[in-house]
Image (spheres, rainbow, N blue to C red):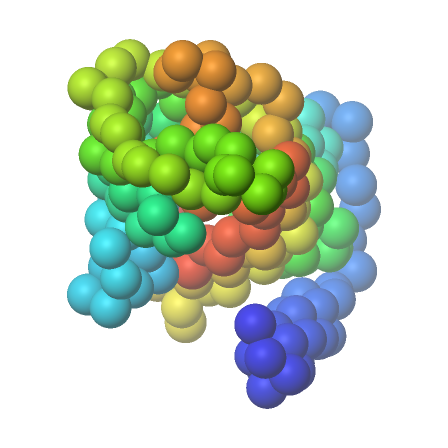
Length: 225
């Protein structure tokens, strides 16, 4: 992301933080009036899919379990490809994430909006096809180079990762609809590989550029109660 994008994100969070600071009393137990349940969908990735190879849809459900703690479950589907340096890999499948959010701001009890941090454990069982990969060999000068290419058929593989996140939820007027925004660093925990080859694109995680990645979530949610 460029400098302008970072400045935009910082401005958004500062705005949400200042708007959400209203004093309230934090209680040990959740009264019926304070219970909160949301369902939401991601809008960023479906819009971005018009400009990229990645096709991603996802949604979530959240429920405040105690004080500032919110349990969250997410489910999605992604289809993506990786084409780079003589590699051509396609992947498609579902992904699921489970975790908690901790609300930092003070007016969450009545409005449900605020600034929060959170964590997720995620898993994706998916189908992968290696359409092309480079085969390396040693030439007459003793140097390693690409000598040919090969492919592998579709195979079931899987990956798991951990996410930390920081985000904001803003109510749209007095309606039950809210805007959600999150920045989500991701850290790969494991991958079931095909023929020992690293999984280069993982649904829900993104293109594997190492053991760390980052994604954005921008969507809309509806407060059930």
